[in-house]
Amino acid sequence: METIAIFLAGLAIFEETDKKKHFAIGAVTSAYVKHKTGNPLNGCLAAAALGLGKEFYDRHHAGEFDVRDLWATSVGCVVTIRF
Image (cartoon, rainbow, N blue to C red; front, side, top):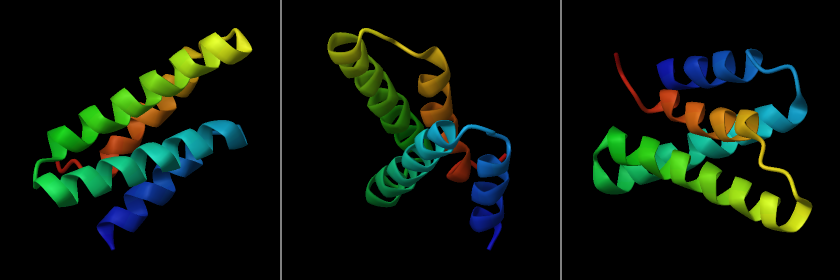
């Protein structure tokens, strides 16, 4: 239940639908990798790597590298981190 609350709170901080999508993909990626490896740091690194790869793809194909998209995808890992 706590994970769902953190996920919903994370979605609420973004106003743009695009950033919500980036956050959600980062959260799902992070949760999956954490589940497979047992390590939340691996999940965060996977989310960040996915976001970075997506932005390099966008830069090559659309001409724009959006740091805010990278940040939103990477922040998705908060779903798997316990402070």
